[in-house]
Length: 202
Image (cartoon, helix red, strand yellow):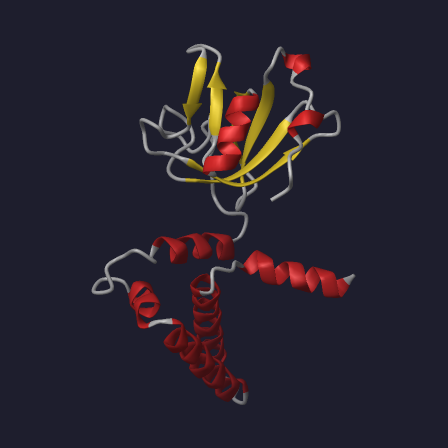
């Protein structure tokens, strides 16, 4: 997470408040606009859940404190004038108090399916192993998850030698799914791997 130097932010321009644009870290969708004073920003950084300053209530309020629809903090950036914040989050439930995904009544869908699949896999970590295959994988431990990735890789290699498109693509899907489970089990995300590839590309 970027280090936000509070002393460098221009709270004075907005009479002690900074606009905070809330963006889904996975989909890129803008969820809402709120305002933060210095105390709200400090609390957000400390608790890793987004807290705003409510202009109507005249107090701090943490998104989700009554609804349970928290914004889990991923990163915060200040703009070039240091008077506006861009806050990357992973939302827990709808962003708007009216029950919509965003405050503009837009649907917050993943830019790509892999981002969505990662979210689903993360959500299954605490599920019942009796009803969720993904939860069973997590429950078996990292060695078994890694072993499963190896098995799926071998099966893909075997299918690659033949010309059965359906079988090859299904094995490729199995490998990719189990690879994402392995990343989650190691507390990494696909974006972490992509960053390595970006670095190599440079």
